[in-house]
Length: 399
Image (cartoon, rainbow, N blue to C red; front, side, top):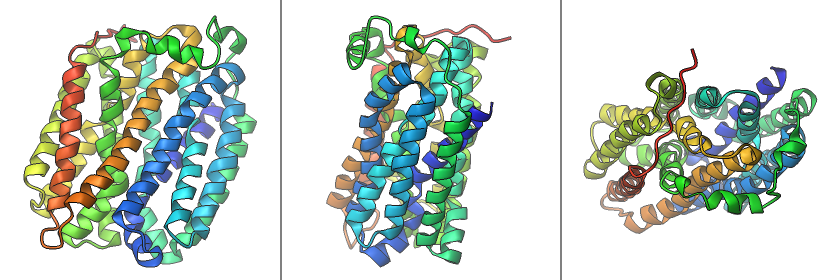
């Protein structure tokens, strides 16, 4: 239990690090001269490196266990990245720091999912995953109004130094308290290293699920972690504290959404037909914002909050393919799905940076964000259509 608690705290930090740029947008723009394209590149670097690291993480979990894999990467890379961020004097320092932080955060959630998959029944996997995500999403909460207040009071550089110290302490706690599941050597089966991923990608049952896994998390993560700041500043004229308040509500909604989706698959004994309605509603909201990028501030806030809530089906969408993955590929299976999930966010961060830059107009601040929401809506719509052809997974009720 202490090991899971240490990993959960690490996941709070991971969620914080992926989402805090939105709140620091005004300060980074003023002090370091970062443009929207720079911010997009920095955020995308976090997700891209995080996603690519999943292959090494999966092999590490299956062969060496979650304790050593996670403690080493989180302590060495995330801690160093936080200190580099605090010392940055220009955009490239921030971008490099975000890449290091993303590399170090890569194994945190996967270590928990690996332990859940090895130590608990498949019927419990979606619930435990959703609870872990909900708890970790508190990092989004800390990266909103609390970060804005701390930055105003102490400055963002001292705050990042403090976070680097906390990160190192959490890594030490993971090394001390996490217990690897028994029988790791038996988890290797006949597929070692990267060949296990090849075996997984040959499973056609996974193909219709992967696009929605890759896109589902992109709108709430991209908007909450990056675009909410520029959008609320450019279109509504909000300052750092006001942006922090709006993103705080969105972060709380993401927590609530993860908790809401968690037990539904075992209640209704379906995963596919729970994921579809929520993502359809998210698509509708994105399309509305694409057509109406400057509603009343209250309406915009409610819609951003709704996107955060409705997109909380990450745990469900990871559990869906997990139902078809053989036991000896557990670590690589969950990390492959996480590669597509986080990789999708990273690709969308880079792509949306180009979209916003291309459509930016000094005469119409809403044009860039109409294009942004249109791009998100198109991606969700296409992924959702493909997902309609997936095979459902019907878990047993957990009593």
